[in-house]
Length: 300
Ligand SMILES: Cc1cc2nc3c(=O)[nH]c(=O)nc-3n(C[C@H](O)[C@H](O)[C@H](O)COP(=O)(O)OP(=O)(O)OC[C@H]3O[C@@H](n4cnc5c(N)ncnc54)[C@H](O)[C@@H]3O)c2cc1C
Image 1 (cartoon, rainbow, N blue to C red):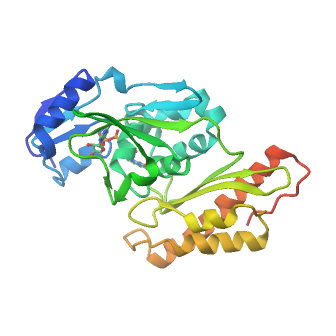
Image 2 (cartoon, helix red, strand yellow; image 1 turned 135 degrees about the vertical axis):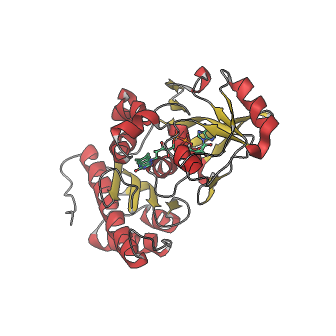
């Protein structure tokens, strides 16, 4: 299938891009890597009057560190983020999760900003950035604003981005908890997750959890921050009992739909398994960083 006819602009600066977005309003659509949007255009699920290709805007490229914060340009290829030394060394949650996104070929074209703006509730990057409590930087003709990722995802494929907005950067603190884990189940490698879980835990020398972030993907219209489970875990050590209770609290908030790939019941089962594995792995990793003497819980 072919997309409906559109006019095409390829601005070379952010200033030019926001002027075009302002001019076209809801009739103008940004295209970045095109890995999600080209199929949508081809299937005519979207028929914008104008495509604004942001690939020539240098200001949107690159990864840098400033004041202990990793600043990721929206146009950064997912593959470049995956291979970046700072990500490998400082933000291992991302390094663990990114290889699950599609295939090397799609990660070479697909951008970090495109994945977050697209906001598929099964996508790995939105899930991880929510676990990482990232900050989103947005530009429009009215200037720049920052928003917490906690408020960014509204519903399926919908974020707080307005038609005249462009996502320019994602900020992540380089100071990260000692325990992390990403777990995903999909039918084939490279498919979107049926269910995924991202977890970050700070574990002290005595094995007590000082901070917790737990996010589930594929279980609702947005990536789900399991707040009750997170609150419950603070001040506790992970035992079989506290682990089971945290999993129970997390899955209460899950509300997955059935589709061609899996029934609701199967997704609920996977939610339980992925959550348990992620919590356990994050906790055991946190303990190991604090000292080998503490006995780890076993995985199952
Ligand atoms: C075979 C295949 C397998 C895939 N598997 C996975 C997977 O397992 N997990 C996964 O997460 N993804 C997967 N994807 C999707 C891929 O990760 C996309 O790259 C990503 O979802 C969108 O990034 P993009 O740069 O291609 O954005 P585009 O497709 O260009 O745009 C997507 C949407 O975001 C908007 N947009 C893009 N950039 C910006 C911006 N800077 N500011 C505001 N709006 C913007 C566009 O207007 C559009 O609505 C797969 C894709 C393919 C083709």
